[in-house]
Length: 423
Ligand code: ATP
Ligand code: MG
Image (cartoon, rainbow, N blue to C red; front, side):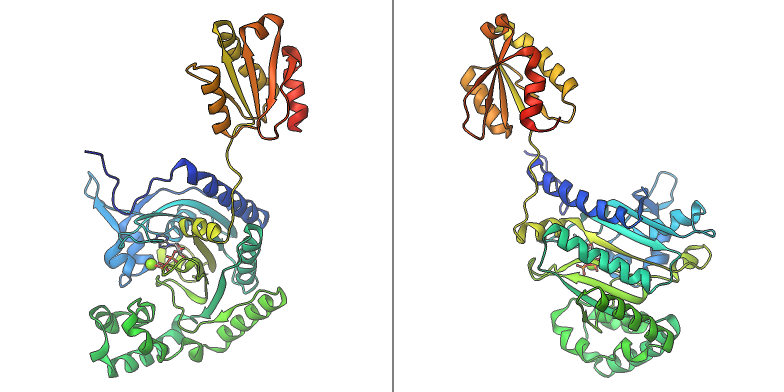
């Protein structure tokens, strides 16, 4: 019987990884060009960190975390998202003391969800966070940066949704209004929502139950409860986005799935991926650092789902440059085969920027040429025992249909370098 992978956890195969690498490279180069620096974090944290930061009454903490007791009996959890660990690391390492930090990280996240297209149990995020900035300039810049990212990637089918969740004080009044509103229609709610009505009514707005969408549509809007400062923050953000030509739709229902957000929240959504339309989501979380045990530090960030980004890139007709060698070396005959090994290493010395693949495991000329073709290389170097005796090698372009040349072995690297335009 074939061994099975765990449900919802994917192998990312070689034919997919060039897209992944291309997208990661473009995105991360852009993010670094805005001044963000990489931080690498553990995949495991104490369970308590996530319960405290994401919120007890959220889908993630209530039913999606991979938690277990380690051999010492401590409850640990595979990270379901990156922000909590980032905040924890910043406090642990004193990164927020009289400093501001612009950080990015990337890697797998784990949520016990129902696997479906675009929704997996191990998935990947690129995560960008600015800590110590109270905005709204940084809010705007983070969003403008993501808009530039779509342009760089040639992705057009995305729309920006924007909302403000205000501050805890004004949230309390909104919360009361939500409780009144949903209590009056309690018989139409599902079990999850009834439970949340008492504990965390804002979460009802994030319900994905289609039967509740009309009710949610009519619910009191946080935007109507914003205090003056939050209103000014939101207005300035909108002005900065307008000035940058970034279009958005204010969506008063956008609340996000984690409790720690306040003020600005946003989501880039697409119609190209079916039900799983959120590609890049983020928001401000001014209270989180203090909640996790640090000094009050305003902060904002976004996370992008890499699986969804790859799917969207492909849906928009994007094609990543294929990972292929530049040169494939074939050799027929005993002397040639042994010479080819040295020759390939010499070429790698002389042309360190080029990909040189050597035919391994012998084979006839035809079979080797087939492999050369399949490798995607632009050039093939051909060695036979006679060529080796003459101190020559055959050189043939594989994609342009040109003739085979005979080149002095001592000149081969230079000739190839010239043809490959890399020297
Ligand atoms: P959704 O509403 O689709 O469940 P979310 O609000 O839970 O998303 P976040 O926690 O904000 O998502 O994560 C940021 C991004 O990570 C999402 O916009 C999405 O692209 C991606 N993402 C979240 N959960 C998954 C998952 N289970 N599988 C694949 N990608 C995911
Ligand atoms: Mg979710």
